[in-house]
Image (cartoon, one colour):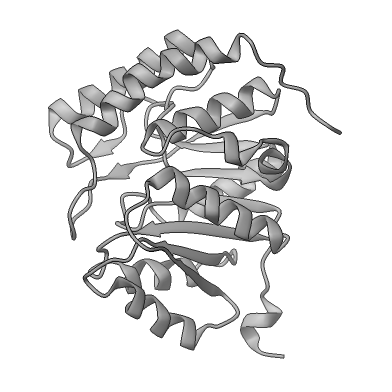
Length: 252
């Protein structure tokens, strides 16, 4: 039995990647170095910069800790996570996390999210930029304000008690993902993050926030654009409206 097999974790982190050749090896190394072991699933959307090849070199070094799903092209952040969720559920992980590849989320905070789920018996733990003020570094002020007030807007419309509704740094217990019909999650962009939290809340799962510091990427190119924010702003009204006609019944 190898050392990696002995450290087989109950937690996995899904890291979507597209053109992340500058960050891929470093983010994988940072996760593997954590005292709390997390296995890694990379979902690569046919990056033309060779991201997948870099990940595969890491897989050769740690075959029991890292895996990759390669897709045919840019199919959306939401669908990348849905594919990743299904993969991790099939492999029996209890805690399944989301994280960006560009170090805007500190890998060391993964352990804090998982531990908060354990200590507070939480079902969803959100790494929150806004639960204790505005903890964002190196973002232009306009983007900070847009993100902050977008979360306020979502909270107003949906009534979910979450300060950072668009956060992409989240830890789910497997029962949350098993309860949701993942194939019916409609949004593909950053509104996907809103829909996931809203759906978990409507099912009655315990959702908590843990403060984190979000740091704007140093290497690589941001995938954010105005269309992503438009989806979130207008989609949330449709999300709330559709929820009025749906029953959220959990099977215990």
